[in-house]
Amino acid sequence: MSIKVLVIDDSALIRSLLSEIINKQPDMEVVGTASDPLAAREKIKALNPDVLTLDVEMPKMDGLVFLEKLMRLRPMPVVMVSSLTEKSSAITLHALELGAIDFVTKPKIDIRNGLQEYAEELTGKIRCAAKARLHGTTTLRHTSGAVERKNTADAVLPSRSCAFATTEKIILLGASTGGTEALKEFLKDMPPDCPGILITQHMPEAFTKTFAKRLDSLCKIAVKEAEHGERVLPGHAYLAPGNRHLLLNRSGANYITELSDGPPVSRHRPSVDVLFRSAANCAGKNAIGVIMTGMGDDGAAGMLEMHQSGAHTLAQDEQSCVVFGMPKEAIARGGVDEVAPLQELSSRLFTWLSTQGKRSFRV
Image (cartoon, rainbow, N blue to C red; front, side, top):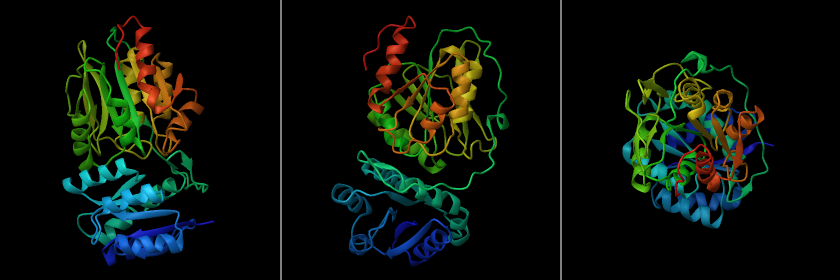
């Protein structure tokens, strides 16, 4: 059965282009379009779609107001369609907080050709949304896209044995679909003196700075978009900038951040595999890796390398994931020491730290 999609956008051109892209897929079809939320409300009742694409800024009713009402009254998978602006990025992140599964961005210029370039991303996220977990339930539809050839972390940095003698701990986080809320949940109770944290979340470059500022306003620790060559400090979290790999490196006795413009790995830049590989290389047994909700398998190979280097590794469990793709693959490859619900990941991490001769942390 095809995934039934309802396209909601005030632009007739965007509605036409999205419909064209979606209808070319053998496993999905556009069953209707709407120019505003009020029209969409009636079509949802009549057409019973599996997934909505929803423009961020809408006439007649604010898109966020509509989304909030939808998630309260008739929860269903939603993929937001956002512009690459600071205002739109803030609105989109709020939409993810309200329950949207994921988002795609509109090109700034040459919309027709630009959206065609986004076709693979858009349809992949619609497939992901169709099987995503909503409010403790999972949709019945399961689909899969074609398997693509992809780079490994070797394309960015070689694997090597960790030769550094240190006891300073470091936390590495990787997430994708559903990760914005998962990261917020994990980080919000981190104590100000926790080990330094490096984060790779699949996200466009226009969004990462806004997301980092949002996390910083909510957390006890400092959160910022990573810059090249920064010393990694306790009580600080560093988010990979969109479209650049984030790596852990060392300068003498200190951990530092490194940014790379190397090719996409596991179809992503930034890639969780690259971050985890770098941690295996230069932190070894002093690293703690956490892999969270996300589509695909980015991070699975890197987590296995961390595990083999002596790091402690944790994965979010299926019930608390929006999409149990990345953690599932990491578990299947044998790279995970503990599997826990999202709400328990931080306490599990600090329980392990206390067994390493570290003082107890209160989270």
